[in-house]
Image (cartoon, rainbow, N blue to C red):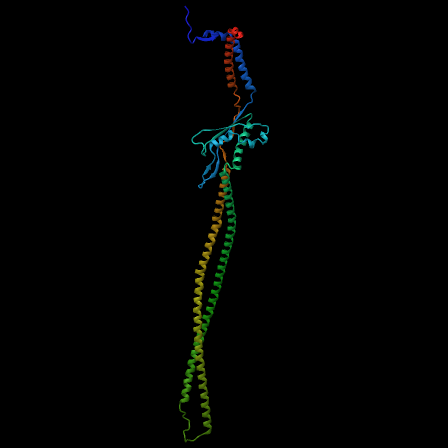
Length: 442
């Protein structure tokens, strides 16, 4: 007693108003009968996959990582990055670089732009500038070609960003950095003038030292002259004092002699004749002559005493004058010593201090300022080098082996497609043979 086939074992088909039932064994039988066709078509798929893998142009994958570059700096010197990640990605995916590249020698035979895929991992709002990494991928028939495409595409982005109005912050930052470099260079040139001025000032201060040394020598010479004049004055005082001692002695002798003479003149003459006495003319003449001679001696002694007193007075005046000049000279010597030991020493120390300050400025301050300005110029140069719309953060990496075509996958896909196509073809053929009368009748 037969059993009805289940839904899994039967496939019902309506042909010409008549229900036709096909069971699973019949399907398998149909496939078995068409096994040669299935094998042939499947083999054809395998061959097609192999042929495709052998004939297709090999493609190498070039990759490079970039990120939005530094377009300016804030007041603290921290970099500010421009461009949003999506803007950069769309720029490459829309081949905006092709207008710059198609005129180059490497791309003169290309009719269409090379394809560059831009990928990044979203981490937030992508329309705001940031530092996330973008990966640029390019498939080219050679490693050299992939290298050239990526290099020129990145260069085109930076060139267009500088040349147009897309990134005005970059142009302003470049102009500001160059202006600061000019200012620093001008300041360095001014420092050269400052160095010359300081050298001139040092030379002038050293000239002042020579003047002070000359003043010291002049004071020493003046002091020696004053000392010598004082020595001469002291000798003159001693000589005058000696003369005065001798003059006083002679004055005393003259005064004694004058006293004696005056006494002799006043004493009564024992031989004199009184009034009314006998007069001897000869005696009178002799007496008168003696009296006149004695009176003359008295006058001479009086003159000598007067002259000696005048000489003593003038000598004492001369001694007092010389002593006063000696005291004045000693005061002058003290002033000279004070000027030499205090004023000139202080002036010399002041000039030496000024020279030291100028040498510090020449040897430390000015070189430090010059070095600082040179460092500022180097910093600006470094900043200018970092200023770009797109920054390459990794070298271009190209696969050693082609990544396309993938021969095994292509062969497998074509084999599977050919196998299922052969099954469909076997079923269609079986359907045609079973219903050929009906199909041809129409």
